[in-house]
Image (cartoon, rainbow, N blue to C red; front, side):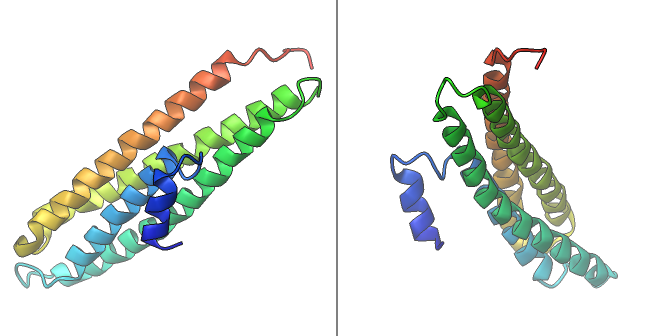
Length: 171
Protein backbone atom coordinates (compact mmCIF):
# COMPACT_ATOMS: atom_id res chain seq x y z
CA UNK A 1 0.00 0.00 0.00
CA UNK A 2 1.30 3.48 -0.71
CA UNK A 3 1.76 6.08 2.01
CA UNK A 4 -1.30 8.15 1.06
CA UNK A 5 -3.53 5.06 1.19
CA UNK A 6 -2.06 4.03 4.55
CA UNK A 7 -2.72 7.50 6.01
CA UNK A 8 -6.27 7.52 4.62
CA UNK A 9 -6.93 4.09 6.14
CA UNK A 10 -5.38 5.19 9.41
CA UNK A 11 -7.69 8.22 9.47
CA UNK A 12 -10.79 6.11 8.78
CA UNK A 13 -13.11 4.62 11.37
CA UNK A 14 -11.91 1.12 10.44
CA UNK A 15 -10.09 -0.68 13.24
CA UNK A 16 -6.99 -1.39 11.13
CA UNK A 17 -4.49 -0.02 10.58
CA UNK A 18 -4.24 1.44 14.05
CA UNK A 19 -1.70 2.56 16.59
CA UNK A 20 0.40 -0.58 16.39
CA UNK A 21 0.84 -0.30 12.63
CA UNK A 22 1.53 3.43 12.97
CA UNK A 23 4.20 2.68 15.58
CA UNK A 24 5.90 0.21 13.24
CA UNK A 25 5.76 2.67 10.33
CA UNK A 26 7.27 5.40 12.54
CA UNK A 27 10.07 2.98 13.37
CA UNK A 28 10.54 2.20 9.68
CA UNK A 29 10.78 5.91 8.88
CA UNK A 30 13.41 6.28 11.60
CA UNK A 31 15.37 3.39 10.08
CA UNK A 32 15.15 4.99 6.64
CA UNK A 33 16.60 8.20 8.03
CA UNK A 34 19.47 6.26 9.60
CA UNK A 35 20.10 4.62 6.23
CA UNK A 36 20.17 8.00 4.54
CA UNK A 37 22.58 9.51 7.06
CA UNK A 38 24.79 6.42 6.92
CA UNK A 39 24.94 6.73 3.13
CA UNK A 40 26.36 10.25 3.31
CA UNK A 41 30.11 10.81 3.26
CA UNK A 42 31.57 10.78 6.77
CA UNK A 43 32.71 13.95 8.50
CA UNK A 44 36.27 12.62 8.38
CA UNK A 45 38.01 9.88 6.46
CA UNK A 46 39.07 8.02 9.59
CA UNK A 47 37.96 4.55 8.52
CA UNK A 48 34.28 5.35 9.02
CA UNK A 49 33.16 3.88 5.69
CA UNK A 50 33.03 0.26 6.95
CA UNK A 51 30.95 1.35 9.94
CA UNK A 52 28.63 3.35 7.68
CA UNK A 53 28.06 0.35 5.45
CA UNK A 54 27.30 -1.77 8.53
CA UNK A 55 24.88 0.83 9.97
CA UNK A 56 23.16 1.18 6.60
CA UNK A 57 22.72 -2.59 6.27
CA UNK A 58 21.43 -2.96 9.84
CA UNK A 59 19.00 -0.09 9.33
CA UNK A 60 17.74 -1.54 6.05
CA UNK A 61 17.08 -4.87 7.76
CA UNK A 62 15.22 -3.18 10.64
CA UNK A 63 13.23 -0.98 8.22
CA UNK A 64 12.08 -4.04 6.30
CA UNK A 65 11.15 -5.87 9.49
CA UNK A 66 9.22 -2.88 10.88
CA UNK A 67 7.18 -2.63 7.69
CA UNK A 68 6.39 -6.35 8.01
CA UNK A 69 5.38 -5.72 11.63
CA UNK A 70 2.97 -2.99 10.51
CA UNK A 71 1.15 -5.61 8.41
CA UNK A 72 1.41 -8.23 11.16
CA UNK A 73 -0.10 -5.81 13.65
CA UNK A 74 -3.15 -5.32 11.43
CA UNK A 75 -3.56 -9.08 11.05
CA UNK A 76 -3.13 -9.65 14.78
CA UNK A 77 -5.82 -7.14 15.68
CA UNK A 78 -8.15 -8.56 13.04
CA UNK A 79 -7.61 -11.92 14.76
CA UNK A 80 -8.65 -10.41 18.10
CA UNK A 81 -11.81 -9.00 16.57
CA UNK A 82 -12.62 -12.34 14.92
CA UNK A 83 -12.14 -14.20 18.20
CA UNK A 84 -14.48 -11.84 20.05
CA UNK A 85 -17.11 -12.39 17.34
CA UNK A 86 -17.23 -16.13 18.03
CA UNK A 87 -20.52 -17.19 19.63
CA UNK A 88 -20.42 -16.98 23.41
CA UNK A 89 -21.66 -20.58 23.55
CA UNK A 90 -18.52 -21.77 21.76
CA UNK A 91 -16.34 -23.54 24.36
CA UNK A 92 -13.20 -22.49 22.50
CA UNK A 93 -14.10 -18.78 22.39
CA UNK A 94 -12.15 -17.81 25.50
CA UNK A 95 -9.10 -19.72 24.39
CA UNK A 96 -9.27 -18.22 20.90
CA UNK A 97 -9.51 -14.74 22.43
CA UNK A 98 -6.54 -15.49 24.66
CA UNK A 99 -4.49 -16.79 21.73
CA UNK A 100 -5.37 -13.75 19.62
CA UNK A 101 -4.56 -11.31 22.42
CA UNK A 102 -1.21 -13.00 23.00
CA UNK A 103 -0.37 -12.59 19.31
CA UNK A 104 -1.56 -8.98 19.45
CA UNK A 105 0.87 -8.48 22.35
CA UNK A 106 3.83 -10.23 20.72
CA UNK A 107 3.77 -8.08 17.58
CA UNK A 108 4.14 -4.70 19.32
CA UNK A 109 6.75 -6.23 21.63
CA UNK A 110 8.77 -7.06 18.54
CA UNK A 111 8.10 -3.56 17.20
CA UNK A 112 9.51 -2.13 20.43
CA UNK A 113 12.63 -4.28 20.09
CA UNK A 114 13.22 -3.37 16.46
CA UNK A 115 12.59 0.33 17.08
CA UNK A 116 15.01 0.15 20.01
CA UNK A 117 17.64 -1.16 17.62
CA UNK A 118 16.92 1.70 15.26
CA UNK A 119 17.26 4.20 18.10
CA UNK A 120 20.72 2.84 18.97
CA UNK A 121 21.84 3.16 15.36
CA UNK A 122 20.35 6.64 15.10
CA UNK A 123 22.26 7.76 18.19
CA UNK A 124 25.47 6.51 16.59
CA UNK A 125 24.66 8.53 13.49
CA UNK A 126 24.10 11.64 15.64
CA UNK A 127 27.62 11.15 17.01
CA UNK A 128 29.48 9.77 14.01
CA UNK A 129 27.42 10.68 10.97
CA UNK A 130 27.77 13.58 8.63
CA UNK A 131 27.24 16.74 10.69
CA UNK A 132 25.22 18.31 7.86
CA UNK A 133 22.60 15.61 8.49
CA UNK A 134 22.56 15.68 12.30
CA UNK A 135 18.95 16.92 12.30
CA UNK A 136 17.98 13.85 10.24
CA UNK A 137 19.78 11.56 12.67
CA UNK A 138 18.09 13.26 15.63
CA UNK A 139 14.72 12.95 13.90
CA UNK A 140 15.43 9.23 13.57
CA UNK A 141 16.09 9.05 17.32
CA UNK A 142 12.78 10.78 18.11
CA UNK A 143 10.78 8.69 15.64
CA UNK A 144 12.29 5.49 17.04
CA UNK A 145 11.40 6.60 20.57
CA UNK A 146 7.85 7.41 19.47
CA UNK A 147 7.58 3.98 17.84
CA UNK A 148 8.68 2.28 21.06
CA UNK A 149 6.30 4.29 23.25
CA UNK A 150 3.36 3.75 20.90
CA UNK A 151 4.04 0.03 20.65
CA UNK A 152 4.28 -0.18 24.45
CA UNK A 153 0.75 1.25 24.70
CA UNK A 154 -0.50 -1.60 22.53
CA UNK A 155 1.32 -4.15 24.64
CA UNK A 156 -0.16 -2.74 27.83
CA UNK A 157 -3.75 -2.60 26.58
CA UNK A 158 -3.54 -6.19 25.33
CA UNK A 159 -2.00 -7.36 28.59
CA UNK A 160 -4.85 -5.68 30.47
CA UNK A 161 -7.36 -7.45 28.25
CA UNK A 162 -5.61 -10.76 28.86
CA UNK A 163 -5.72 -10.19 32.62
CA UNK A 164 -9.48 -9.59 32.46
CA UNK A 165 -10.18 -12.94 30.79
CA UNK A 166 -11.76 -15.40 33.21
CA UNK A 167 -10.73 -18.63 31.59
CA UNK A 168 -11.19 -21.90 33.45
CA UNK A 169 -7.86 -23.14 34.77
CA UNK A 170 -8.73 -26.84 34.61
CA UNK A 171 -9.40 -27.23 30.89
